[in-house]
Structure formats: structure tokens, C-alpha cells
Length: 272
Image 1 (spheres, rainbow, N blue to C red):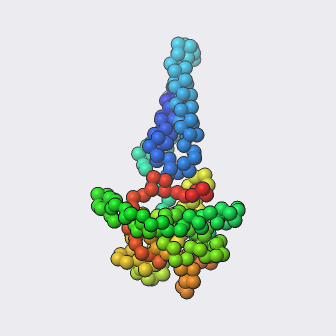
Image 2 (cartoon, one colour):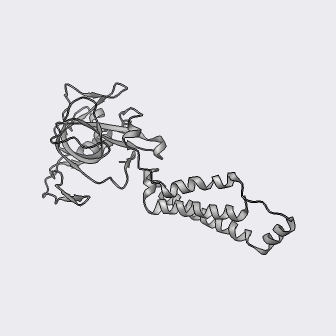
């Protein structure tokens, strides 16, 4: 591979890294905290590539090339390095969804390291009266906002409280949770699974989190569609959903299920 080609390839790789990062698409692959490091890496790659490309065009490099008496074309292996760059430029892989979820079992999140952390999360779910929120638009279609008399919470917090809070303080408290829909495989037309992936670093270490949704009025959301579910948790459910590993999946009794746009950051982290 020529030095000029190697430098140009490095510049393209750096520009691609910056484009994915600055556009927000990097959130489909890694956690938000990687943003400054990805920007720095992209800038370093561009700088190194430009230095290599300019040095290959210098008079000294040209004289050395002529002194060698012959030149080598690019090898096939060198051209193969362009393939992943083209794929990353032209293809836009979606974040993990039902395809990946069907290949692993949902598991409870790890319990909070400190009991006080769980207690604080329980306190936050107390409903607060507020004025009705205006309707929102999804793909140009006005959608009524979820009931304001509920607490928005992440799927992680919901599962931590339902699994580990012995006081069952969340029982009967209206909450609103966002996730993508998956079939519940129960045969019941009014049930589905509300799903999210939680990552520590990147999509490669993603852990599936799921809650059941029951008594959903109207049609069950399409697979992989993002929805906001407002409902209440009933801890004494006589027919709990079970994971493949034998863990019960807590269920929300739905009051409202509305479609929403995919969040800018589709993954949850331990801090959410």
C-alpha cells in the first residue's frame, strides 16, 4: 500500500468517525459518555492522515520513489480496507431491537449497591398533579400526551423497584415508561413486552430489560415500534410472564399506550 493511499484512507476514517459522532448516530453503537473520546479520536486520525499524505507528496518522498526505479500498485488487500468504510458510510444499522432481543433472555437488573439509592428512586415515583400536556406529533400525526398524573421513569428504575423494593411502594402508582414493543408469546391479544437494552460500554455488552404490558386497549403495537405506556404495577399478579431463565417479568396494567419517536439515545445505562 502506498503512503499516499494510507494517509488518504486514514483521513476518510477520521472524517467518518467525526460524522457519526457529531450527527448523534454513534449512540446506536456506544454510550453517550464516549462522545468526547470519539471526537478526539476522529481529529487525531484526520491529522495523522493529512501528515502521512503530505509527507508522501514531499520532494524527498518523490525522489526516493524515483530512485527505487519502479513502483508497486495497490494490492487487493489494500483495496479490501475500503469495503468497511463504504459499508459504514452507506449503511445505517438501526439500534438493537427485537432481532437481538429474541437471541437473549431478559434478566433483572443488578440491585443498587446501596439501599438508599433504591429508596430515593421509590420516592421519585409519587405522582404529581400537573396541567394536561399538549398533544405531540409523531410522523406528522397528532398523538395525545400520556396522562400527566403519572411519574415518568426508566425501565431500569421500574424493574429495580419491582424486583428489590420489599415495601412494594410502587403498587398502584401510575407510571409512564418508554420502550419498543415485542410480542409477549402468551396468546393473549392485549399483552405485549415493553423492551429496552441497557449497555455498560457499547452495544456488544447490551443486556435486555423487559416489562410486560397487559390490558392494552386497541391493537397491540407493531414489533419494534416505540411506545409510551402509562399504567400501574400489580405485584400480586396470578399469571406472571416468565423469562427463559425462569425469572418473573413484572407487568404494567396499561391505562394508555401511545406511539412515540425513537429516543435520541435508544439505550439505557446504569445511571438511568
